[in-house]
Amino acid sequence: MRVAVLSDIHANLVALDAVLATLGSVDAVWHLGDVVGYGPDPDGVVARLTELGAVGVRGNHDAAAAGGDEIDWFNPDARAAMEWTRGRISAPTRAWLADQPPRHRVAEYSLVHGSERDPVWEYVTSVPVARANLAVLKTRFGLHGHTHLPMAWAERDGRVEAIAPGPNSTFQLNVDRALLNPGSVGQPRDGDPRAAWLLLDLERETASFRRVEYDVASTQEEIRERELPDALAQRLAHGV
Ligand code: ZN
Image (cartoon, rainbow, N blue to C red; front, side, top):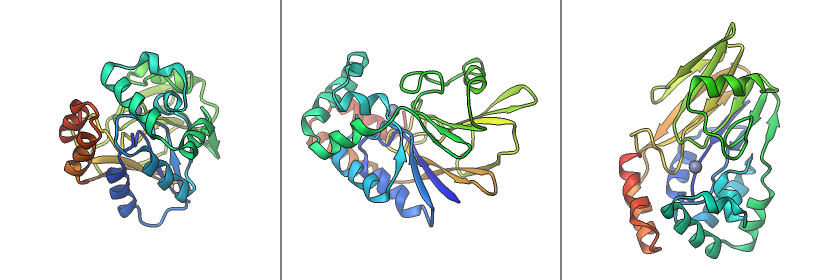
């Protein structure tokens, strides 16, 4: 079974469609939340995920868009974009976002947006935080997003190693346990503006970290047309 894992799409339909164009044949699409927020096309992205039958979890931006008080924790640009998103999304989009659970489990994979301990908010950015979350993981593998940085945290014989995967690199998951972060489709922050996603082969136990170029200028134009904060357009060119 081949699975595409998509995280932090952030209403960037142009980036999502570029990823979908290179997917090849996959048996399932899993998403790790922050489907909306920051970007210009929340309804389009939710419609696309619905068409694909994607299953996944709620991010902090999705919870805020559905009306949650998560918005109180946002920085000014994120908040401005979220207020726009709340006013813009259709009733079916709002219902779909409200319906996403904080956790989802498929076979040996636990899906969350933030972390196993705090599925909506915690950022896994260090070995101690990864170790604490591996310790409470109920499956062999955990999938999370939220940091917008592609990463693998691998546990072997009680040791936890942080691995920053190179673009288009494949790992054999011959580890005791691992946390995998695909990076962000719609707002990468690792200095590489290309859309990031993860291809899992569940039988071969491989994880392939992929990058795909997309038309950044087109998303920037839409952000400006909708009068969202200009910094949200600028950062896409630099992947920050
Ligand atoms: Zn995000």
